[in-house]
Amino acid sequence: MSRAGEDFERRQCDDPIVVACVVTRGVDTDRLLHILRTAFSSLSNHASKSPLVLATVPQVTEPEDPWLSHSAAAEYLGISTSTLYKYACQQKVECRKLGGRLDYRRSVLERFKEEQIRPARRVERRGIITSAHGSGK
Image (cartoon, rainbow, N blue to C red; front, top):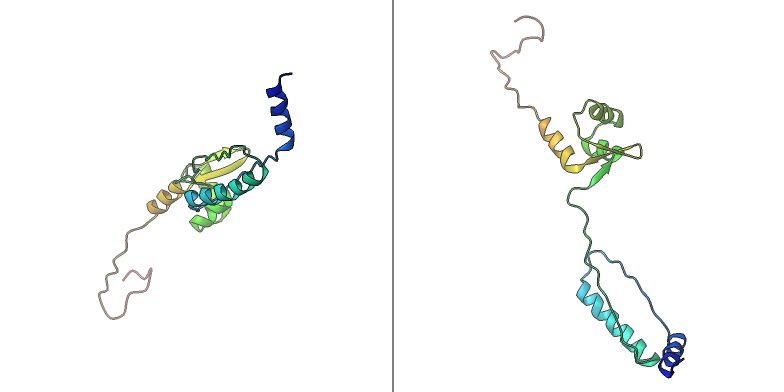
């Protein structure tokens, strides 16, 4: 084996290797990278002169229109789960079925709620005392 290969193998065994995965949510990534670089550069200065490599992965955001479970969708609409199931069977509400579970998009539920709005009824009063319901007057 060449001298360079022996040096490489020795360095691999002797140098400490730090592998870290940091998942953050709502944090300033530039500031966090600066803190990590500072911390690891001080470590690498004491251990060896091996290069410090920090890689960033593009930020993954939550979808704008998330899927809700059946019970969460029923709660969102303010109805029982059995009523929501009936609406899904009647195809009044769009849903998907994965692994035997029904899921609903929030935008679809919002649209369904908007379609259920009834116009205000105008009550006509003819006198001081309103007529009794079903009395024919």
